[in-house]
Amino acid sequence: MPVQLPELPYSRTALQPHISAETLDLHHGRHHRAYVDAVNARIAGTEMDELSLEDIVRGSQGSLFEAAAQAWNHAFFWQCLHPRAGDDPHGALAERINLQFGDVQKLREEFNRAAMAVFGSGWAWLVQHPDGTLAITTTRNANTPLTGDSTPLLVCDVWEHAYYSDYRNERARYLQAFWKLVNWDFVSSQLR
Image 1 (tube, one colour):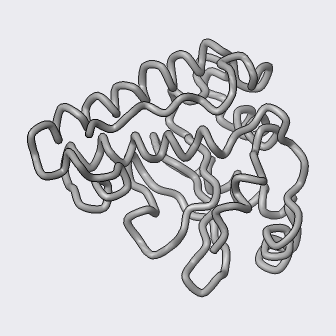
Image 2 (tube, one colour):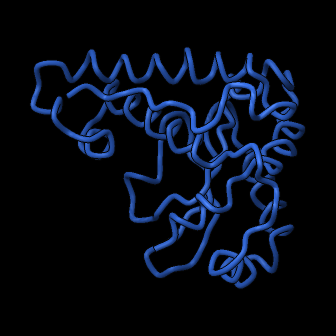
């Protein structure tokens, strides 16, 4: 069964003014679609064509891994955003953030530092380690924590195509906008 391009969980204009419809059309409609199409082209007629996208990511290498990981990372990224977001986390997630980072503002500052330090293209993640602690990590290119022991909770795409139309090369301004869209309910739902 081919991998499907997931629908955005909101309309293409819903994230404005922080992320434009033009950016979503390019990012979801072209880039994400291209990764899904590349996965499907590579798995057609193989034993992998019946696997879930997560299993393909975990069981592949080379160009198939790159396309599958990018497809998975993007699908996860869309879930991390919501047009009516912007509040601070609450409940168990807030408690863990406060324990690990001091407060949500310190989490944002540390996350932004990590995201700004990614040279070239990649991703900034909030993850939960198997022992329950939270951490901020980054991955380059198509890499993803999905292939390790940590559980992804939140991701910010810092590939230039994620923000260039709206912010040009101003990644810091893009990160400010990102925090206004974080879907803390989704992030909370990923806790183990």
